Amino acid sequence: MPDLNQFLLFLHLVGLTLGMASGWGNLVMGKLIEDAQPGERPVLARFPPAIAKVGGIGLLLLWVTGLVLVFTKWNGFGGLPWQFHVKLTGVVLLTGAIGMIHAHMAKARRGDMAAAKRLPVLGMTATLLSLSVVLFAVLAFD
Image 1 (cartoon, rainbow, N blue to C red):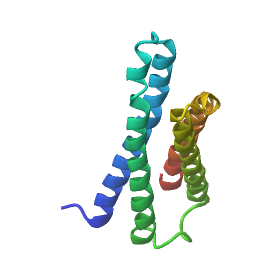
Image 2 (cartoon, rainbow, N blue to C red):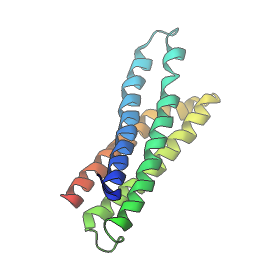
Image 3 (tube, one colour):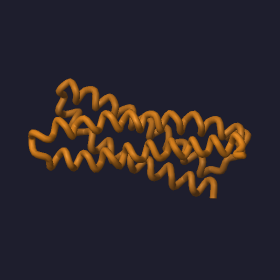
Image 4 (cartoon, rainbow, N blue to C red):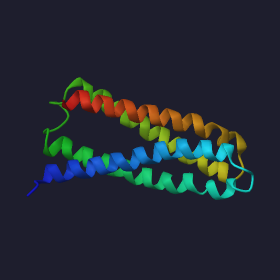
């Protein structure tokens, strides 16, 4: 029978998969939308906001389970290695980037084309931050 921390780690990894699926899915879909025929674009454009919700759920799950694990498994932040603190800084930056993505998506839906054009750069930034967070998680807990 798994204990609480194993269950929390499982949920943490589910959150990671939801978040990463959102990021990579939007990178692929962005290219498909860019190359699509004009009539296909409105249908394909329904995907990014939908998968962004999945990513948001993943990020929320990561925050909740991560914070609980810090205290139930590691007895707080003090005993964690410096790599963890770099990882946590990356998570804070990633959360900010995702907030900016959601704000730009809302502006784009209202017709702000400048905001829409910034979305790919913000998406790539979030993806790179995600990869750095995973790298420093591996370094912290290996």
